[in-house]
Length: 131
Image (cartoon, rainbow, N blue to C red; front, side, top):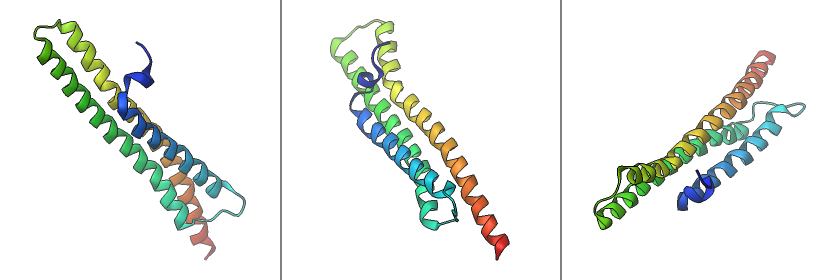
């Protein structure tokens, strides 16, 4: 299949940035909600929600990459004239890798978000019971 990093083209940079943000926000939020004496801090909630935002951003960037990839593939077909269906299918396959990557990143971010959100809500419920 080749190198996925190279196959993603220029869209690998915004997708990589989204992954970096998800990791950073997840680590920060995990420390905040699992440290001793943790409480349902609204600032932490914003960081937790940021995990889901960047997951959605990865999907949008992936879709943009796919659209640009398909357009580029069809431009190449248009210039060459007749090409084999196998070549066209290969180009479209490469173009859809960015969408698949974005969806995978969103799936991971959603699971992380759910776990952190659950813990934050449990802290919030604990505070409400204490008052």
